[in-house]
Image (cartoon, rainbow, N blue to C red; front, side, top):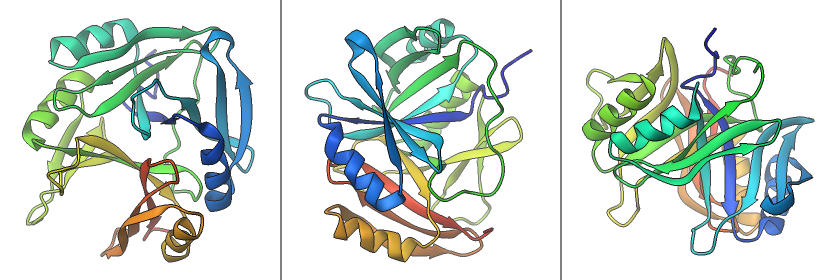
Length: 253
């Protein structure tokens, strides 16, 4: 039986040179707590927990890698998916690797340069959450790319994703679908200086207050809170290490 999480965003990982300041920032902003997990030669892995549940992770990045949040997509076979990533024009940055007794993962880059990961568990996995967006957790993932058509074909061929642009949408915002589920979005890069990237959205109960708190904690605001009719409110911010993410409150909650 296929894993129900195949093709879904199943994990988010903060990659930064110094994890300690990040832990303090996200604890202050979202109330996350940190659990340190010794990984032997791989160093110390930090788990971010919200209300006692694991919501994300944090690892020390290799020298020269800029701070960023990395999204992981669930796959059935990491080795086969890694080969397919390359066949379709992407690159493998970290080859399929096993975390003993837990999971296997690889880190890749799509043909336009956006980084992402693939992951499969080594045992049964509970289905991904499908309810209303919850504060303190990642609730949406969005690809910012140079060429929507090319990216749509790449990820469609790789993960079987489909998608659409709503009729009359002047932004031509692309909605990703995995089977019959909306899982994320895509839009063309707004700034010519920004590299292609995935942007993760974290749910909060009050976007205005949380955005103000980002500033108070030493972070930066790149897009002030904005309301999208019938969708919700969001802002785009940067933590104290330089990693970007978005804050979001759904109109459904």
